[in-house]
Image (cartoon, rainbow, N blue to C red; front, side, top):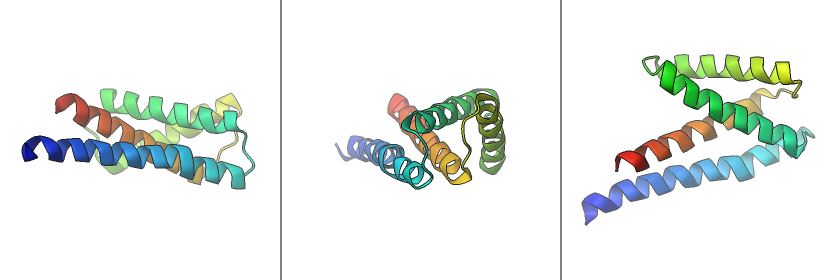
Length: 110
């Protein structure tokens, strides 16, 4: 029973952390910077897609290298889309995307 409980609690904790980032921290940052809800959603979506794509295509990179690559890609995509860029918001969105991806990965393997 306890062998099953620990992975469930790990996934729940990671999911909760990702949700707090996505629904509390990121909107708070956006409000201070006067970004629209649509801009925040675009940043979050782009961050999620970039994190998932990097994990699939560059899984061998170290964590810091993946983060640098993800930041560069997110900034490039948002610039092309004309979405206002905030480094703090991008960092929070990337962290949330990584937490969510890790929680989903652990859930699938549990």
